[in-house]
Image (cartoon, rainbow, N blue to C red; front, side):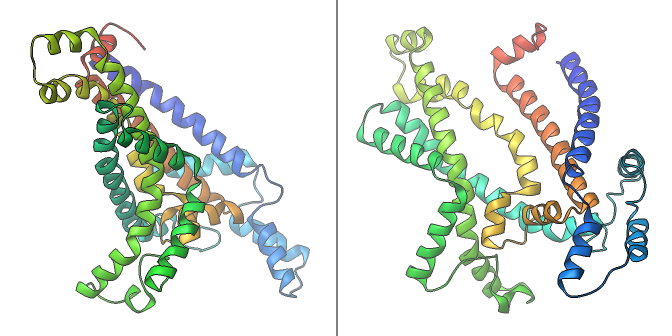
Length: 334
C-alpha cells in the first residue's frame, strides 16, 4: 500500500502541471481577451475608446506580455505564494471571491450528497433483493427517468411547481428581506424553504445513477457461489445480504468520495445559474464568459486539484474496504 500511495503521489505533480497548461491554453483559445470584452461593452454604452487607452488597459492587466510569461507569472504565484491572482472584472482577489461563496456551495453540496445516499442506498438494495417486483420496476423506471432528464429542465419544472403550489419561486438561498439579516429562526426557516429545490435537483441526478449501479453490483454478488453456499448452510437472508454481498456492492458509494471534494467547491454550474444560487459555479461560468483569465483559471485549477485528491482518497478507501482491491494493489496491479 505504501508503494502504491507513493506512486500515485509522484504521478500527481506532472498531472497537475499538465492540467495547468491545458487550462491556460483553453482559456486563451477564444479570440480576444478581457480587454476586448471590456472595450466592446464600453462602446455599446456609447463611449469612445482610443488605441492609447486600449494599450493602457492591456498593460494594466498584464495582457501585453507573451502568453508564456503570463502563464509563468500565474502558476508561480499560485504554487509558491498561494496567490490565485486578482479578478479582472471584480478587481478583487480571487481568494476573497471564493471565500464569500464557499459556505453556500459546501452547504448545498453536502445536503445534496446526503439526500442522494439516503435514498439511493435503500432503493438500490430493495430493487436487487426484490428483483422484478413492482418496486424494482418502479425504481428502474425512476432511475432511467432521472438519468434521461437534464438537471436544468428538472429545475425549471420544480420552480414552476413551487410557484403553483406554494405561491413563490424558490430561487436563490434566501428571500430579499433575510439575505442581509442576522441568523435567527426565521432566517433558518427561510433557508430551508429555498434549499430543498437545488438539493432535489442536484441529488436526483446522482441518485438515479447510484441506484442502477448498486442494484447491478448487488445482483451480481447475490449470484456468486459463496452466497449460494452460505444460503445452503442456513445463514439468515438479511444477515447474509448485509454481511457479505452488500459490503462489496458498496464500492460505488465509496467511489463517489472522489466527486465530493470538487462538488463541494464548484457545485452544479448550470443549476446554480438557473436558480440564481450564490455558489462558486455561476462565478466560474461568468468568468469564462468574460474571459477573466485569473479568476476562471484559478477556479478550474482548484477544482482539478480537488478532483485528483478526491480520486486518490477514493482509491485508498476502496483498497482499505475491499480485500480484492487491496490484494491487487499489493500485488503490483496498476
